[in-house]
Length: 302
Length: 331
Image 1: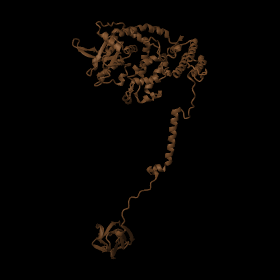
Image 2: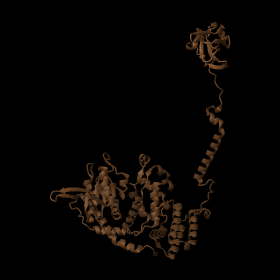
Image 3: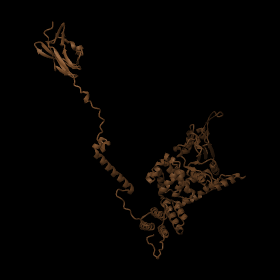
Image 4: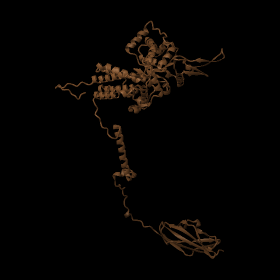
């Protein structure tokens, strides 16, 4: 026969709101080593309306004098209102059965429900207050200053690219007023003459013909810079405006081709003669000033 | 004037050799009416040791021109009609078993000649085209285990028909680059056409006699190679070729979308060599920018890869070359 087993049970609260939970505390005091079993182990209700929501683990305490105490909690829940008398907790040790002595009662209280008078129709979906930046992502609104800085930087870069493309530099170029073609050619020929002694034949004739090509381009509108000597001659002959000095130009271009492309070294006299022919060509083809009514000439046209 | 390169001596040498060119030109003029550009291009290719790709509709005296040239130079002429069933062995030759000698013997193909007319080269598959084009490049042919050097002079004149493109095998870019020039042949003028009729219905046709020996031509080529090419002209050639590759660097931004790829370094070499031959034809001992311009279209037109944009806009290689030479400053 098992030693003295004392079984006690009590509730956290004697009243319970419908659907809520309460705990049933169970204490067993017995001799050490006694093996027993509660009868609710295989059940999920204490009585029909009071359900066991959870069975918590046992906690054993040594009471000394070869005795021990086992504490066990049950979580109870009820969904039907009413007063329930809970059956005693039963603990079986071998052939002996022990029951808790104190009867327990649990009152399950119903939940108050509003009357139908308080039921209101469903409200329509409320329109949120509109702000102009609502369409922007939240990150952008938070870090708006990043966007502003990026726009300023992009604008600056585009402005630099535009100015560089237009002027070749960020600083706007000062537009230099160009001299009339003949004046410009004569000035360039004077520079060549002053450097004649320092230049070799190839460089001298290259610069001399370059000046004439630019002059012909500006004076007659012929793209002489991208033309060969024979093309320049042909174009000028077709126009007929330079008939008087065509021969002069032919001689310069012919000698220049020999020096530039055949590696010939001209004599100093040849250089002088070519320079003079170039000046004669420019002077002869310089636009003649138109006489005005008063006999005065328009000096600006040259 | 003093001179570093002995231009005067070279001019005299050119004058002495120019009679060969004059003889060939006269002989060609007796047989071919009009087609001055074709005749000049053939002579340039002959002197520059290059090959020519001719594009023109049938009946424009392509075959007659090369046949006449071969007859005038006392050289061997072969005509290969390219067809879809042609085999490489039909061009270069093959090994044939001789029952009498009981061994394999080499049977040389029509490529073993001085002048070869590869008629409608784009009608044969790529393997046959490359067999001929390799022979053109290497100037030798290997049959079995034996390698044979091809005769000198060796000029291939390939023709292409710009119409009837169905069932043709267009020459790949790498192959077409091996031609020194691509010459476009147009219809003759009314006067020339009338002269062609008169000459062809006449009872007696002018006889073509051999006027030049192949050795003389080889000697003339050696003189062509001495024609002075100044570094200014070299730079001009390089600028033109580079403008086909990087048009944006020469202010030709519009061409950037028109060109898929530009001319190869072989184009630069060909342009220089053809310009030299052109200078020789004009009895000049040095190259001037006119020589480069004269041969520029023929040398470059087949080496430019046009983009889809260009093709959709009907932009031709010649128009692109015109744009380039009008933009590059002449030295």
